[in-house]
Image (cartoon, rainbow over the protein chains, first blue to last red):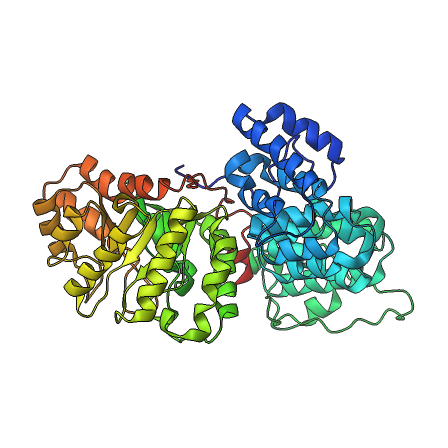
Length: 272
Length: 282
């Protein structure tokens, strides 16, 4: 290892572009079975058997929880997420167990629990785990938190803030499950994105490319309104030429029923 | 030059330090659990700290291309507070985690009966979990403390060649070496060990089983002391291979005894948008 490389926000599961949260568990299982090295495969199969035979809580630490903890060094970082999700399934982990191993887990274990939620929990019982992960500043956890379980259960306010947090933290919005469906016609999300773009532009900073994408997905952009009046009339706001920021091609979109009045932008707001 | 700092408290350091460390050649660190300056008053306070060493801190380190591992323990000073000693019961479930490569720092501070108990119990935990142990030697009454430490190690289930005795100096190095332990030296601006004395010790005792660390923390300390020692070694006639042995291969060999060392680090390019630490402060 000599130089940092690759983005950590995308779990290293194969095939590329999928995550353990979005892949059917039987597909994940077959994938691990064919790709793990011989020693790791033996360990993994035994771990699943043990979890299936001894689910629940027993002794100071249940055997499946022990296997969950050591999956990284046994299977390698590339397959650890998938192995952990499958161990959780084998142990038939309920929301209570999932919460325990999440809060007693390393960042990697927490990420695996988040990936397991859409597979193992049908109702909203595990939302506190998603909310916890969204409070962190660890992009690996934030990315894992905005998977299919969040798409299904997170309320509108929390979901919008999760999307905004991805833009703040640089988590690619590709990680946000159900983005198209949930963003569509979300006027409040469009308003938040517009305000954020205004704030960035006013500060002479670039607007994240993903922001434009999400704004387009809301379907609430108005191609005739090319500038934000609050940004151009703010005497403290640098222009795009002197700031080096991209042309502010964003514009505000008002939620229906606001009569077209803009809330003042807050170009001096603190970012994080 | 590749550098492994085997004892540094990054929790107490800024991201500027991570950046400077990477620039200086640091590619791996071990962060042992220690006293935070302000005494803790409950076991729960340790658990949040352990979680940080297994979550946030490795994430932060990875942003700068540095592999972060930790050693976990009840430190000697706080072993004397009965409100904290309960953390010993929580340690087993932490010692099975990936990234935990040793039990530490354990050892003596004031050489009390409570410290005796905590040291013996945690050497046993290290043996039970197939982990080596990072053992701090006391700053006050050091030589007597070393003798007592070696006695407890000999009585324990952990072989001395799985023990790293840290904060050694001219008065303690020989006995530690004769006991077949690994030899740790903390190079500090004012106290403990300095670069020039370190060269003298390396000349006298050789580079085998010697580890040099900055032990940088919230006190007057310098996270680049490992690099300063490496530079002075080269200037003093040691070979690049000697430097690599002391600053990389020895710590890799010692913490590798855990079977859990993973030196590949996956991190975004510093300019990548995924770098939330850089962006968070914009």
